[in-house]
Image (cartoon, rainbow over all chains, first blue to last red; front, side):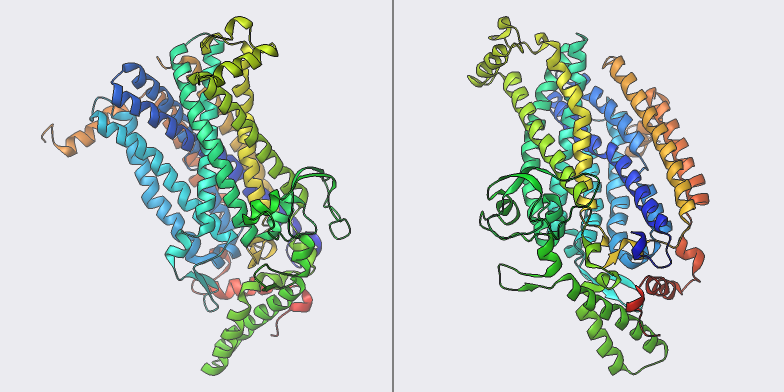
Length: 544
Length: 80
């Protein structure tokens, strides 16, 4: 990064990026569990509402208590991201204008207040409001959290696919021309569906892990077994749903951020009939020589799968890194310019912007200003390329994208298998349950005596350890998804408009290092406190 | 105030809820400490508004324009 900078300290960019990543990753530890547990506790309370069985009230209250601990610990951790925008990313912050501010304001006013109002009814309202109203409050708490996620993801999606805006050279800001285009951007919809459904996986895995811990300790067995059943269904629906929405997300990425898709796949040279890389050797620590290598070493692929994933057609065209750098013809016959051409147009946009502002300050005539605006608007889609000195700068770090994507997908497949087996065993699906148990017995994974049984409380200990081990892996899969989304769009803070080294403030890197370290200490302490409180509550159990 | 009125019941929900908190007391303590650290320390001492500090009110666009112009690779510098 240092060699492309002029008067900005290279460390400022890297530390500002690292600080933002640290804060976002930390914030994202809480959000998915909030979204996931909201579904589980809602289901438990719905069963209580229907059956009137006090056991289900106790179960719902237990998961609500753990939801409350996580919710309290996550409160305000996202606000720090907004501080960082104003201090570390001030040019970006000004440049995005009200487009970024509007969704965040809606999130703050509507969703957060809705969430915090109903969370009070949920915790304080037992025996004070009707069962129906309490149930509604529980679901609305979860809905409020989900709507919050919607607006945050709308803001994030706009950075990846800027729509519904116009750049105003007088104010130097992007101004919203269509709220609906921003709020209902197809990229935002795909991102929302995939992100929220994947969050349910963490909720389900958390419930499965806690339930299995009780089964290991031979306590709270009814709560554990019934919760496992709910976790199995939510987990299965969520994992399959995440795969389906992931397919749709990949298509969105292929359409609007083809470089990210090429980096995810380490696809150096594209074409039609592209296979999806199952395994390949991409050195995790250095950028591959994509210009001279035809493909990643030791590549084993699933034929046609990448074309299908990106275009819904097994013969579809998928551009590789070199195609994007050098320009290519799209299936519809239009030509995507090379990066060198985009750089020239970007330089023209930047120069015209400066000319326009100078002419306006000097009181130039309307016709001159109109001509300059016309040139600016024509080249504005490539504005950010004017800051690129070498085309290699628009290639994200391929190893991070390649491996993060594989970790996310690989673990996702493992989760589908786990929740499928759990659902079969928990619900005793005819034939499948017997087959699964016999298969386990054949490999000595359960005793022969349990082959025809249906008792989830009498399985060997390893069975209960599985979700406990899988829980941190679920977080790793979720964070890997974010790495793919955010590393894959580098160097852009706003796709094609603003690279990181223009977006960043002209700060001393030492001041960013200090706040980074401060956050690291603060976040680690807070995480330790949360895990401690959470584990204490789990140990106390539902009766506390 | 009527005890079956909406306002009283809403007040009672919060009043009684806060009064009988157990785990909630710990969680609120953590939240309050966290908010103080975030808003009274981090925001005030470590996260100033960079543009607000470096540009006069009303001239923010000029400041950002000059910042953005200063990041251009030499060969692409716009005419002054």
